[in-house]
Amino acid sequence: MARTLLRAEDSGVLRSHRQLKFQSGNFLYRMGIKGGKPELSVTDGRDTITALLQWAFGTGEVGQSYLFQRKGIYFESRVSYFGSLENLSVTPLKVFRPLYDLKDAMARPVQMDEIKRCFSCHSTGSAIGGRFEPDKVATGIGCEACHGPGGEHVNVMQASVIQEGAGGEHAPVVIFNPGKLRPADSVDFCGACHGTWPDTVRAGLNGLFSIRQQPYRLQNSKCWGKSQGDARITCVACHDPHGALVQEPSFYDAKCLNCHVATPGVKPAGDHPGAWCPVGMRDCVSCHMPKIEIPVMHRAFADHQIRIVRPGQPLPN
Image (cartoon, rainbow, N blue to C red; front, side, top):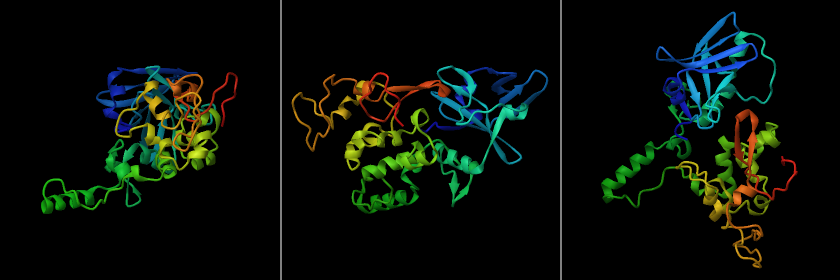
């Protein structure tokens, strides 16, 4: 999460690829570092326009999208980098339409409300006193993005150490700890950036378009309805926000068996409300949280709507 936003000139994707190219209809896109500056150009064969990229969103492992400014207006490049392609392709949009001219083909204007949301989830401290301050932003998700301002916490701990000696065990806690939230609040906390249930419904996202709204999908799971007060089925029960995402399916088996009975014939109970799985006890998520291919992202993502998946069954909303 610390690398979810970069200034474009610091993008390892752009620096490690001499020049990225993509053809869409009559439009040829080029992107890369030129003269030490990150540049996007698009041509229709007759005319060419260019822009200096300012911001790169995403680490590049899945993808990376780019913003630039003109006359105080933010624009998003019509092409983005995708890790699975190691090249550019069309930036995903909920609504697709024909491109009208060269300027339209280069980028789409982004309203300030959307810009603020983008920066709030990809950076730390983008708003100061409620005012958007992109020049003062700390790129990526730092400690204070989740734990709140830490200045007072540091001052209290330092004062306590001076008074009590090393450790400061009795210092008051003046930092916010999301780990102590109630389960439902914990999932909503993560969902502020990853997709809460209400936000996803209001946005009209369902089916394939909701796969990346992991908290929404999790809360649609059958087990969530019975366990919304259970800390064993929250985002942080399975994922460590301070570490890299674990991709190995077997890692999550122990998480599943925290709730599910692991012995044939044993009935579910309060401490293990989930039934025994007759298929097996290994790689549970590969069956019950299958990876779903999202074509516009050129990538498959784990579906967090935990369920029994049957052949030919339509993807639930």
